Image (cartoon, rainbow over all chains, first blue to last red; front, side, top):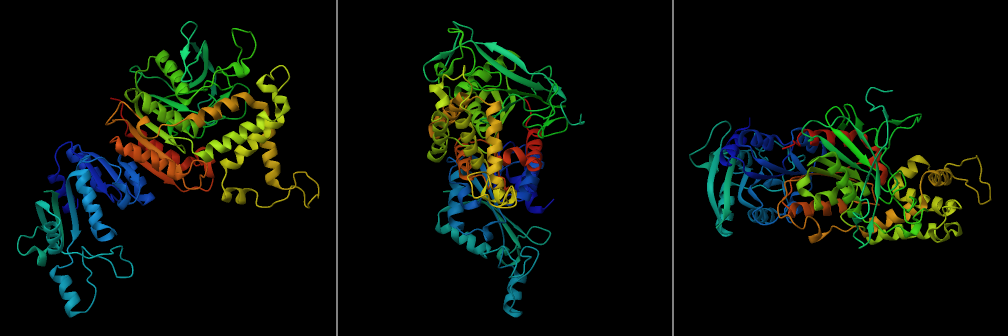
Length: 193
Length: 373
């Protein structure tokens, strides 16, 4: 089990209503369904991944993330999950704001571009960083934006978003010291103030 | 007989709404008695919790699977219904009934009007999709089934599935509307109107009272030809016919030079043998009246527990993808947990009858996770 999936499972409540944007093959949602009896809904674009979701017993909508939220009434879900997609969507601010409207809480997980190894690669080798959290060459990456833990915290401050919980992960264990430098991925639980 | 076939099936008949207990119709008129022709496959379990209702499209009938005695052609959705298939008759009890207004054993304009002893013809009241579902509800009551595990159908069958969800959300666990819409668009109404006018323009239609003289064959055949064009896609027609000629050269006469012409003529004239022209008028009208958009869908429900599997096909221009997306949008507003696929197919609207592999995979997995409780 991926460590971020375990953390997300610990965050959500028993029987919670969960929406996962860009749910991929449904691994996380299936885990939440089993561990937490969660009622889950996924949104995904890729047809093959969606078939896997249905095989896992998930409900999944074919659609893109930007337009997927609009029709849900306010607070339709206990949790909206934006895990590892922030770096791939065009209208990031819009999606976060909409997620905060549709969900009581939003879980945001993303790779930290300011990780020390990434900094070294860029500064001393003059190359785009490639690591466990950012595994792609520039010419094949689905990522269209790079953000850091500090960027995200700044953003939340500016947009009056409350950070309820934060988790910082290294290669294999949690990071407690200077996360913006030492964490490869970050998970935030946010709500509207 | 193949192992995955339901085998030889016998049509059944259920009669209800005997006067004075006529069925009240949306038009304000009433109808009775009403007979529904239906078929059922598999076994209803002791709790009566494994029933699936299959709803047919415009020209369909109750014969969805298996073979009628002495017949070699299987039912219209035989690829999807049977042991081990998407609607697995080892697990589920599958029911399919001919709609009211139809001509395949259920009460419709060609049925005898008990008041006159003659066919109803245009004395038959206009019916709606809601009326069709109301009649099906009587059949389900007759079976003693409190809750259907699922209602499934393509095209007009999908409308009935949506109507079931809207009118009786507490009586179904899941719904699978395929290649359908919440309401007929002006384009869809326009095609239906041309189809109706084509029938009515045939002098043999005789204002609808043609039963002593025979069908308005020309009108009905052309009407069906129009229909068939809308069921295919540009690409599927190219693949199937291209500009292939029936004979090797052009005739320079008004005969069916091209294979596509021959196909449409064949389909049109065959249809006349099996379908009543007035039924075509009544049922297309019912589809045109259908509108569950906005507040009209599930008016009594804020949050629904009904699970939905919505399917559209990318090349379907008669019931295009955006109409299924409208369904999904409305379901989101009702907090419904929904699975939606826009499947790749070149077959146009016909896809719901032919894209068996994808449909089987989806429907089977979806139903496996729909539990009766």
